[in-house]
Length: 240
Ligand code: GLP
Image (cartoon, rainbow, N blue to C red; front, side):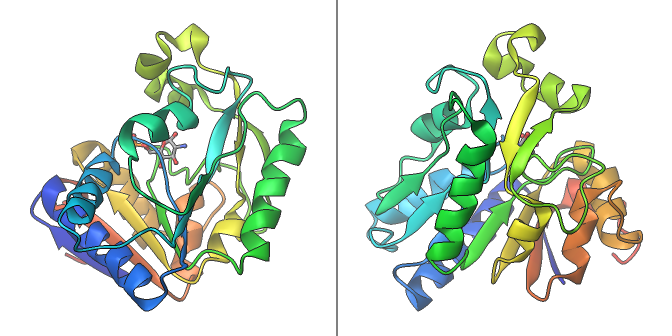
């Protein structure tokens, strides 16, 4: 596991953009797992700047969502689809996002996992981390073997999205997510964490024993994980 601490969020975004640039330079048809959340927004903006300066060419790369809400109109504010429309304005070959309004959400997310496997798996999967240690929507309790599935969202995870849905009552109670096993199948994983609010969970995920209580801790056993953390999120790490 590599841990790179940057002074601030901008530094994290630059490092993340560097890693994505390296992945597509090595393989133009790269498959990329692309998270939602506040944390990666600066990375997507930085990638956009590099595209405009023709420093990076993403036209052959395919992006994939790693999770989505269940039971919301696809374009409703707050869905991952809406997030990508607003923040991920990148000229990718394709962006594959499951339908939040699918009649059979279990089949919908399993089909996404199948498409990712059929294209050879993620060359690079970027992840954020929830304050409770979730990765994608693998909430506490998710096993290392967990597969793509529909999950009940925890109250803190729903609360974190209250703003974008226009109130906690409007946040769906369920999500669909690639499983921990699906994420661990990626050839490379990059985890972004910024801000003091993530300091405690970053330390637990990196330094405590692997446990389904903190799904991000399962990343410890992956052979190619890079944590990109800003100084605020790194401040509780004992190894620093
Ligand atoms: C969301 C997403 C995750 C994301 C996490 C952290 O609920 N499902 O994929 O990584 O929460 O989000 P943020 O970056 O806003 O803290």
